[in-house]
Length: 548
Image 1 (cartoon, rainbow, N blue to C red):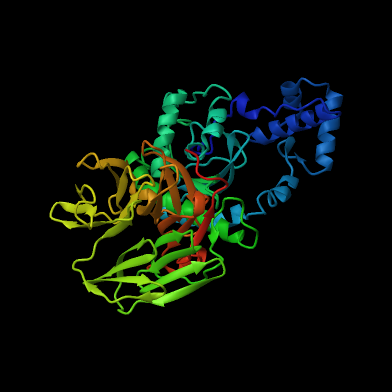
Image 2 (cartoon, one colour):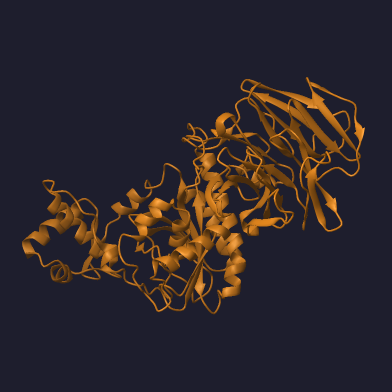
């Protein structure tokens, strides 16, 4: 969003003020004339005189007087006796209260924006995309004498504002291509990005780290940091930002503020999802599994058994194993009250590891515990049925089959906490959640390859799974989302969740739904109030099987 200093506004170009093309409907010309008058009055910094309206429109005086009189009678214009001209009427303020009433966006964001303003000392803004531009809906001005002071309701371009770039970065490819192809990217300052390919490269970075920076790209001397507000389906419905002069909001400070603004945007998105909790979920939106109302301390390790129609998962801190069906859940407490370190389902048997031992669960009962020290950090089933684990090693982690001769092994630098095999068994993936690194393990090579690096602001890949087409998905702990990667390791899809800490993923029959385990341990009361589904098993329907 554009943010000018000391109340001076960068005048929008003709492109941003143009009305939408309309069909030749009877009366449309008169409506366009009325809108033209309102545009002029709304864009003016003070009262607009009749002489100015005549000069800018070129209409006959009688026509202009009729239109102005009609607008004033309905409250859309008001006469300013001191300035001897016209301003926008108070009717707009009445209507504006209902603009976003359905989701209470402004009301929800107000408290968070105020907190953001108080935390940074700079002006905080809320804006929404509208007609290929950003429109400001709310702001809390900073305490400094010299501060950002952009006016609300003014259309701002998307390509050179932090809020606009935050929205663009999360658009589907087709929508982004349409947006960038509408017209040439206008230069407002020497720092404005006008090359679409260069802008695309920057948007890829924005999507990876979650926030955008506008560096004197629309107003010289001004810097802004913004992040998108995502709805339950992962769509960017709004954006928030903090802006200030470059000598106070330095590049280093902007980078430090980025993750904080992302966190505030996620909080707003979660509250929006909660306000919509009484409505039916939108197609593709995640929802709590209807067969399980239990909220785990640390849910994890989900596995779908399509033959039995059972989702097996555990509460690692319970410690309890759950069998969830469509109409209910059976809970099985482990014999030892020790946290579960790892868990893996193997053809009807679930193996669990606790400190110093491992135990199998089969036919609704636990077998005898066997000594095992230390327990693995992660475990996964190979498509052939063999068990693979990641265990601590002097050089990091050793990943391999538990039965000698069942395949290669790898030494991976770091601490591997999640493993997953592709359905065809041609590769495995290993995640070092703390460092945000996911490795690809090729059986034909003993050298692990870095598949993807996630910035800390995106969350930790605590759970991973591969869909029927071979695409990797990850549950981003503290990231409020699950994501799907392209074959090149880039995030190509992000699905927002109503909880901050997803921990594990499992695909249902045919890959047409995803089961997501979550955690609530360690969350503050404020977060739990805004994310009450924390600890529950979520179900994410996919409209079709994942596309290759």
